[in-house]
Image 1: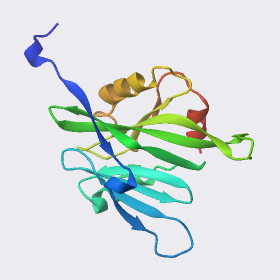
Image 2: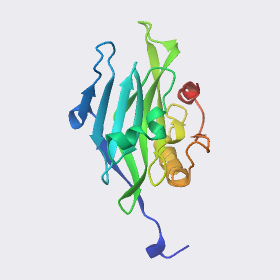
Image 3: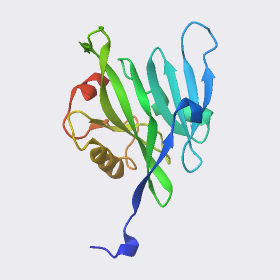
Image 4: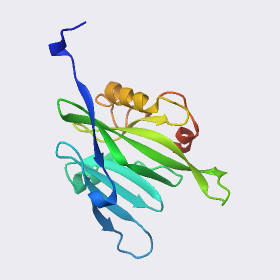
Length: 184
């Protein structure tokens, strides 16, 4: 075991993407409900949440324009979806290398008594710069009672070396309906 002074210390901190904590930009065409939120993140990053046609994308960058050009800004799921308002930042020495966020993916084959799709929870791990910002791993929350720990482990082990556009997004832990719904 290496001496403690050489051990890498990885920790978590949190930020909010709730509309009240962000700058909200509404769509201008009057036809749909598209909105964009730019939310303060950690270490000078912002979190960009774009919502259009009841589907969200989440990206990170130094500013709105930068975040909008990252692969994560185009990473959408076919079914209706949304994210919760808490972002977990994984960092070493206050330098974030990944975020973890809970998503809710609508399952049109599983409906409530009013005929609305029941959302399935999933954690998405997204890598941060240096390099591109993209999804690295998905963890099905219902299929894995330790989903948060699995997502942190995936962030810590895969995010920094993940090659966006080359490496395939990993399914970590047991696969479940939420992860199945991410496939287009």
